[in-house]
View 1 (cartoon, rainbow, N blue to C red):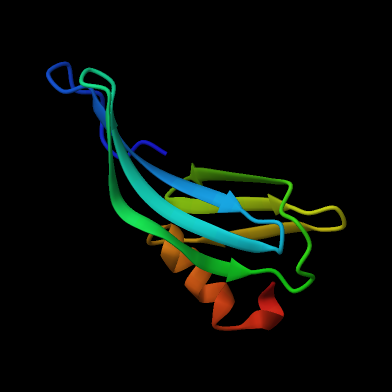
View 2 (cartoon, rainbow, N blue to C red; view 1 turned 135 degrees about the vertical axis):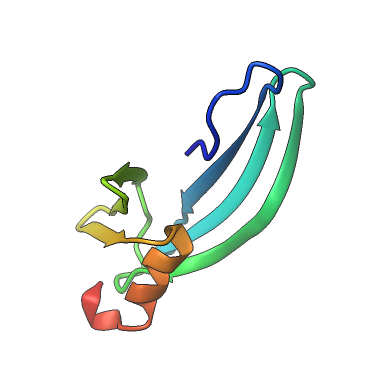
Length: 103
């Protein structure tokens, strides 16, 4: 997800990245990619932000921003998980990890 507007003078973009693991964990990290210079800088190391209750592989994961809310969809072989919230990706998952009944 791109944070900043395109800038003609700077070809770098910041992305929030979500990764799903084989054991049902979802990881979050933030990177800056500068296409002009071919560099990648890690702003935030990948950390686990969610552990699904069934511990099965996360097959696909998508993130979108809709009307100021973050929407994250994660798919396993048997479940579709939906996480919605404001304030950023980590905040969204913190709301769900604080109350496992929501997952």
